[in-house]
Length: 136
Length: 154
Image 1 (cartoon, rainbow over the protein chains, first blue to last red):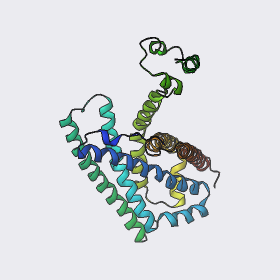
Image 2 (image 1 turned 90 degrees about the horizontal axis):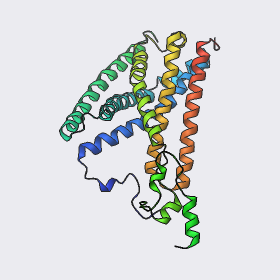
Image 3 (image 1 turned 90 degrees about the vertical axis):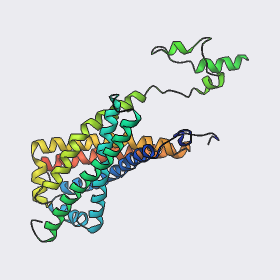
């Protein structure tokens, strides 16, 4: 197409690493969660298909591959949740100064890591119980 | 300027209302070519921005609720999940979650495509696929929840 710079005009900004990193990670995790909608609908449609169809889908969803996918989705959710809240705070006109935004970038990283650790631990507990033949 | 360029610019006159008049007349800084092409503000950005924020605000409690529910269900077998899904408020919140997630996702992925896909044909095709995908997600999700809620699968 055109021989001129096109959106998102990445080269015209003087960017600090944390702004690039937090912004692109928010985008990336959002796209990951969008892909996760496929899993959500697959699971819901399986439940609508009755006990047999659901049992088949649960076999797929309990596989190691899907446990890894769920961990990825939990990580994406943990980040996108806090990054989104950060954006909502910015939209109210607060926290836009450079020092504040640097601090909230750190907070975002720490909070999302902590949330992910908690959720992942919880999920692994679930899988451990199911794997030990507990309530399937 | 010849007559033909005059008629070109008149074809791209801003619509009346919403301050469109202010951009006509001698104070107009747009070139005749710019006016003829007519590209610029589509006056739809606020809608996108606002509904993205609305769906974000809705998703904060809904997504947390969904994640916590998934992790605190005693098991994920059919009887447990379908009994949980069929409870009145669970069905309602699940439907709200699916709809706001599909809407928020559609708005976000649309911007990603608009930013990174530059070829206009590929972009149109990708945007159409993004729309279809999210409509399917929303319709299938709501259908499935209602089917379980009304016991059609039993």
